[in-house]
Image 1 (spheres, helix red, strand yellow):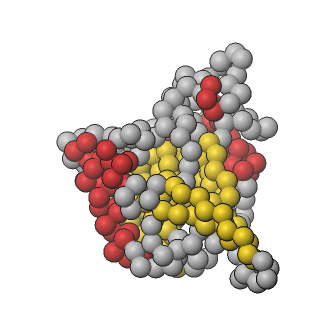
Image 2 (image 1 turned 30 degrees about the horizontal axis):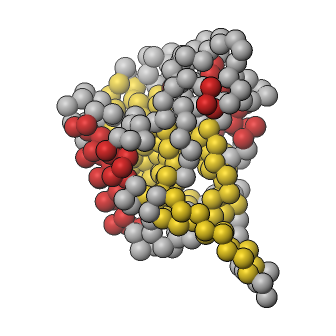
Length: 282
């Protein structure tokens, strides 16, 4: 029997590609993190518009940031994780966790959607994070599936909040899954560049799986002619990531991309962030 090993060193962890005629069957999953900006950043922004883009990516689960629930800002009383899941199709489940419990007559927070025929839920829970010197509270939403954990967060970039938050996230998930063989993924808008001390701290216990490139794009690329053709041409900041907890899980990273080119619409018209995905096998 022939076996071939390819080792990719990322951060402090090793992702191993193992090919063997006698290896156990493995499944491939596509995970996305996406700050959707309450589906209301620009004129075309909506749950339906974002769903059209996501259907092209065909992910298994999406970690979502900036969701409203029944706020006056959104104009209608709806739970955006639910309406977005409905826009994706009948097969999609959803979860929502408020960070701001009382916000514009509703609430504001984070969420996750997933394909129910691919992902079986074991547990869903939320961890509140410190707001530091800033006025907005933040949270971590953890969705535990049968074969993985995929958590979503949206952090405040202020040092008084950011560093304590990443420490709580790491300590909480390490305590529960640090010795586990189940992969633990964290997706979110960290509001921190790759050289930020808090991202450096995360690299001690996590492996960043997504590429460096502009993900927080504000309105800088809207209407640009000619339109950006490569991620290097996109104006913005690298602040959105998907990470893997350095526990006992063995994960193969097959692909990762920042997405801005779609057939069914413009990512720059959907939100002020770009979606980021990883393809993994375990």
